[in-house]
Amino acid sequence: MSNINLETTVGGIPLSTCVYNASGPRTGASQALAKIAASSAGAVLTKSATLEKQNGNPLPRVWHADDSKASMNSEGLPNSGIDYYIASATIDETMGEVSGTTTKPYFVSISGKTLADNLDMLDRIAKKIDSGEKRIVSVELNLACPNVIGKPIIAYDYDQLRDILETISEKKYTFPLGLKMPPYLDGKQLQLAAAIINEYSDMVRYVVCINTIGNALSVDPVSEAPYISSNGGLAGLSGPAAKYTALANVRQMRQHLKEEIDVVGVGGIETGEDVFLFLLCGATAVQVGTTHWIEGAKCFDRIVKELKDVLKEKGYSSSSEVVGKLKPWSKEGAKKSRLAKKAKPPPKRTAKEAGTLTEFFANMFMMAVILWLLIDKYVPKPVTKADLDEM
Ligand code: RRO
Image (tube, rainbow, N blue to C red):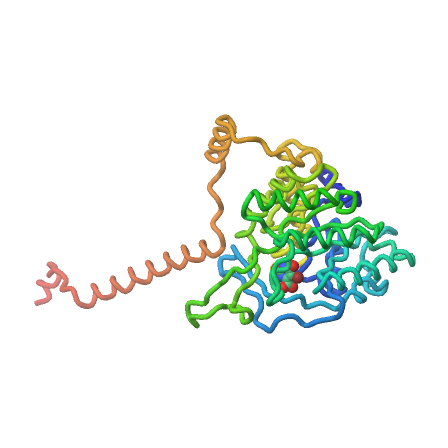
């Protein structure tokens, strides 16, 4: 057993491992949340809740690229309503399989249709915690859902962003608040968002970067139409295709936010090595969304193991040692990387590639047999001495 320490804190909340789930896939009901709780994930985060239960956008509303490099969704916030996610019965069902007497931190995500809805949900959560439900440790306020048809992504509107934070700050909630942010594709825009958040550093304890990249479009060449039915096919892009934007947002948020505000990374994480990259860029923890969607909750065990292996191989004894330690580009670093690449054994062929190769050789063999039979049948053989003797 490796003794690599993956403990961390998110907004002051201790987590046993720095990897947990993103809000979204497989987070809508206690049965799915229980699988996360029973895995190596360091915390459990719910699907973004609205005030009332809702079904979301019409199907089909998700799409996965054949090469697994991208996914899209236009779920439209299907969820069971805030009262379900904060009910003690739901949390009991979620934490049922967690061993020992302590439970994992339970984070609630909210995404109100209006500021009034968000305030109402925050009030309900505060009341629930005050009544003794201490397993709810924090609220992740989603300011970045790209799929509410007809509504812009909140955190792209700086006046609205400030207004929301100002109004919530007046309520003086005591639980730690996190913000789920959209991707910013321009440095100045990200800086502006960070500057507004910094004004509320006594309230905002962490930011989560990034939500899906909004308003992407996947087109089916057969039907000549979008794969996703609602909103003209426009949807949030996730998976490996989003990883580089996510890393850049984590890195820049870390540079521009006040030190006391943690950054949580999310976007395209498939492996332990991906987590390592997010830690280098300044994340104290990461969330896994699309991989959890595709692979199920067992991905947390795999990713945690892979992260420990990566850290061990590189000589680190904890994940926290790496946080924010991204180095500047250097000639020495690039040379080291080139040498490492040369020394690496060639990548193993995937089962698909190996299958293709086997198929190729089988076809070649068949062609050779057919050719041999044809030659035998139609090409005249040279007359031998034995043939002449027979004549
Ligand atoms: O439910 C969704 O459509 C959804 C949400 Br709330 C979100 O925050 N991000 C996303 O890609 N989809």
